[in-house]
View 1 (cartoon, rainbow, N blue to C red):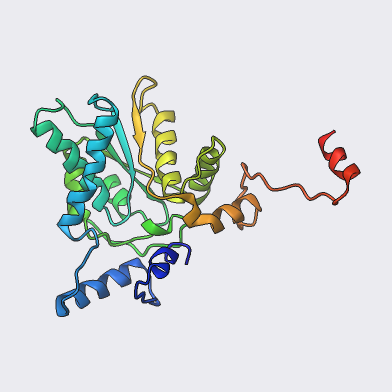
View 2: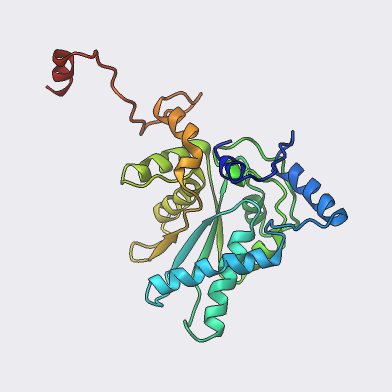
Length: 256
């Protein structure tokens, strides 16, 4: 509901279906083939044309100096292709002379692209996505799989994954710097840390991590983490409030 509240508040007609993203996607494709309904999912190539402008903005903000790496959370996989399109277009226009290496970061509980990458790009097999705090990328059968593979192959790209504990710890670590990120960005930050620790990303490399949503859309996951209420998770960076009696002496005792 935290993600749906904005369109609901804006007056959208919202359907709640008893299925996961992949099930919704199958139904949406059937419905839009039968009714004059516009499909705005990343299956629509026009959406990717809009998304590719983020790549152009990255280059612009770097004064047209190409970063070495760009790390993007991946679910339905339209985003990673859109970033490739944007960078490749700038190279074709002669604005830059190369494109960055792309990294697609997936949650380990919904990692069909990661498994495909690990197999050496052998035949792709969808998976049944398990529950993940990175709910917007909880997708086992991404519609843009072929485009994502094309983008990664042509950018010498990599696919990395993040466990639930890794992505939640990364989110908490980023928040402690004053940010307030979503779990999906935690997935991408985990990929950055893993690739840096393994030496794939060098100390002198410049890497951009794409943040895909504001943390206010995922407050329950943050509440559970900082309350240490997530089963079988250490929540090692949790910062719960200290319960104190409502009197001056008790408050001073905590400080001193």
